[in-house]
Length: 254
Length: 254
DNA sequence: ATCTAGACATTGGACGTCCCATCTCCTGTA
DNA sequence: TACAGGAGATGGGACGTCCAATGTCTAGAT
Image (tube, rainbow over all chains, first blue to last red; front, side, top):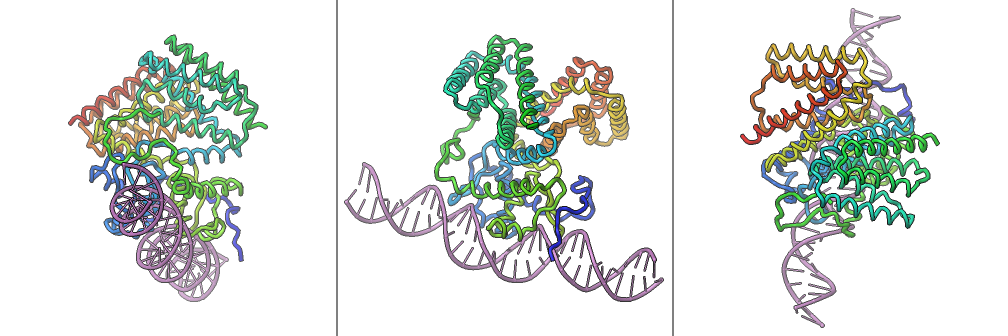
């Protein structure tokens, strides 16, 4: 007999955060193991780039099977905590949020099947972050930063003239826009959002792209930033994202 | 390029952005497996709450061992993609960013050993997000939202008078502040940041807390929001985070 | 007829073992 | 001196086995 799963009456109330008295050990044990490994790293004073004990050593020290510890290690790798190199060892990873990309992308694609709400939410957050932080960034802007931005824009323009895709330059532009803030977390976050947005876009198929318009938008933003006109820069960024939002809506409708 | 942080020891140069041609299969195979599972979910049209195939079925369908598929499943669980319930099955998880908390917390604690920079960066991002988004939130604020906020504040005041910790009310206040935006991603993100901040704070030991002052800060913010005074609300939020930042610095110094 | 306790099937959790893949480092040879 | 190849170590993966948790179903009592 094949009990058809998954199409039954919706199992409601999955994952309510309340303390469901039932599954205490279920979820928590593996999580506890992950925590123990992270604590071990912190306790031993390991720093970024330092090597962790081998899988076997960890298995012995933590008193769990190697397969079990491997599962936790994979999770830690996915969370960007450690880096695993086949045949060499495991190391404390540098800051790296790329792990979040896949999870968020999945969410986005899942929601796109319905109304694409979540993809819009992503744009909203990006818009708030970028247009809100451009002011503080301009405060800290140096000539060097402006020069970097200009060279990025020139590269983007070159690519546009050649008809090449400019997403890499686009990402680089936004990244450098906030470099003055010297906030790695922010840069990583925005990078993640950017990549997720792009992956979702790829998954649903990109509409027609207007390379010249896209380049001009960025030049306009650059101009406002170079002139240290915070209000104008913020407004143009706002517009920039409005445009992205509209385009996404169009594509989703098709 | 991510800005280089301080120490540059000469041992293993791992994790450089270079695409080491060797590490293709190593890192990518497990990642590919995760992607295959996510694609399988999307292809079959599974939605939040629907059941996935069992571990054995997945193992057979994907042509990999059960242990291997389990590692990927654990990763997907950690990324908040699926929910695993012992003895029952695996299900597509609802939006849930709590998975990111542990990874970010680890990062924060790791950085606190040096200069606590990363914890500060976290505050910066929160500050930018909250003070930047309070305006749009006020635009969409209804009387009901205000009532919710007021009741949260009253609960906080009660707790303060009893000398109880108010972190839960604190979190609730900030959550409800942005409820009008109806942006789940944002709420989840801010929740994550809040929890990470709290965990880091716990880990390094909380300094003396002034319950009355804390409550008053929130009342001030509430007042500005209830009066729909965007500028004042934004400024008071800004100051609120400035206070948090100072306190964190004090604790880290001790 | 209804309710409850316990058996049962299903499913994930943990572990051990074996072998393969890949990396680094060292050694030997040209 | 330089290059190639092997040795050793380490992670990657696959089964197989047993354990534990959970939901369901049935038999018995009331």
